[in-house]
Length: 113
Image 1 (cartoon, one colour):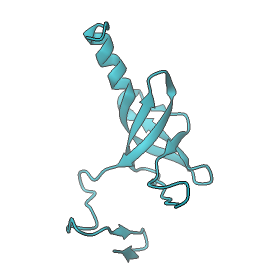
Image 2 (cartoon, helix red, strand yellow; image 1 turned 120 degrees about the vertical axis):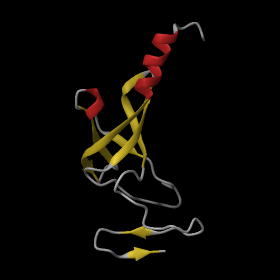
Image 3 (cartoon, helix red, strand yellow; image 1 turned 90 degrees about the vertical axis):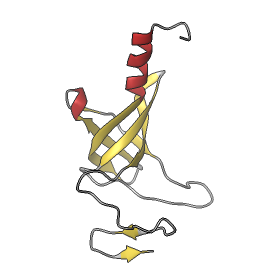
Image 4 (cartoon, one colour; image 1 turned 135 degrees about the horizontal axis):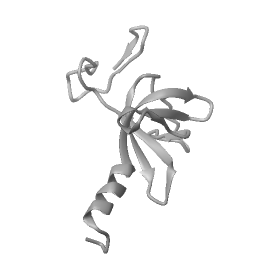
């Protein structure tokens, strides 16, 4: 497929999207480092955290240290990548059950809906 052996293609794709745990955040730069337990606990370079808006309108939110995140890496520069989001799994439940609401719950239990 695409002139690449199937095993090599699978290897490339496996390196593009990874799930890991945030180990350090740099709030002033909007970046964080992620540890990948399934990859010998390798720690990433600083990855840019994606936000909804960054130009005329600004939307800012950093992941928590210890939060599970999905990362996307560039195929031509595997050290460069982005944290594209986090997800609810296991014991971590969403703060909202109504799909028609946007809710943010902060660590001090303040909730904005």
